Image 1 (tube, rainbow, N blue to C red):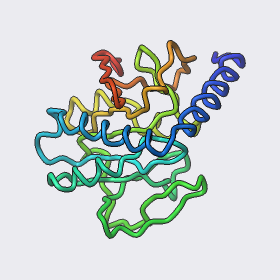
Image 2: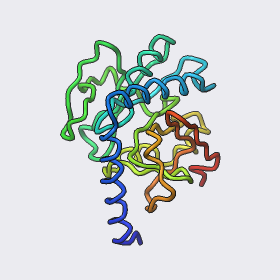
Image 3: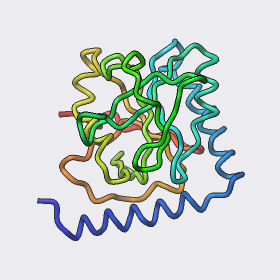
Image 4: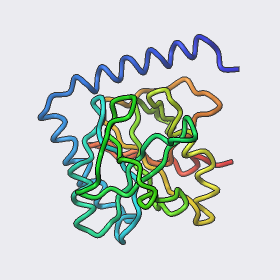
Length: 208
């Protein structure tokens, strides 16, 4: 069983790392966004047009807008998450273009307005670039606490091997790396995490 002390520790990590990333200056955020864009555009996975799920920054997360604009220019299709209207705790992904109507969800996060014609099923996504609050040297990811991405990524490796689901990569500031996170049974480790200064890989992440 996941112990109460571990839950308390996760809360402490979450509070400390969220405070830390929010403390980054405007210039630091801009530099991080450009460095992440440059690193990601070098990925072999992005050498051909893809369906890529991204996010819009919230609460000090790395800004993805420079990357999104660069991916549009290269012919990639971008999807953004929105809270599922009928399945609590889950996400839908909708195509995002410069003219996509937006709104804010109950957490204050920008998301596409619901339009069933713009939904991109998870199985059609090639890549999902996820935000995170903290990560450790084993590829474990700590999110905001809602479990939305853990549910989305559950069993990702098996689906991806069958060509029916996206490959996940986490995006973070360098200051969000810690030695070790308290891990729960529902946590889904990531195979790769990219920061402005580094690219971390764990080939066995997500293995059954």
